[in-house]
Length: 88
Image 1: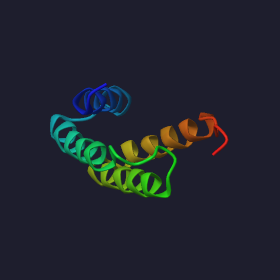
Image 2 (image 1 turned 120 degrees about the vertical axis):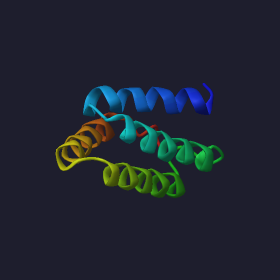
Image 3 (image 1 turned 45 degrees about the horizontal axis):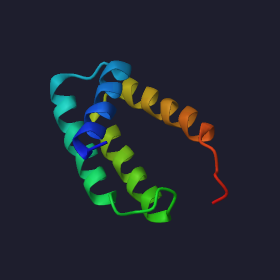
Image 4 (image 1 turned 45 degrees about the vertical axis):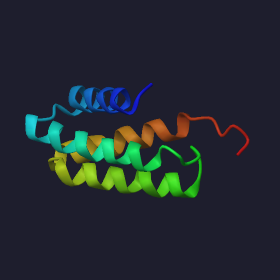
């Protein structure tokens, strides 16, 4: 999957889940694209990747309304525990 496809998929999901405005979609697309470009060479479960993901999430939260940010945080908390450790 290309970077553009990853960005599109993630932004579509956020748009549907959080009911983003057109301006929010534009801002979040830039944030997510920057994240994928900066982390393309990092290992998935590295500390650097974790730090980059946390920064991306904070940048996204800054674009959201208070209600959207709350829902975004809840969504991320539900998703994280579901991922298997894979022995790392």
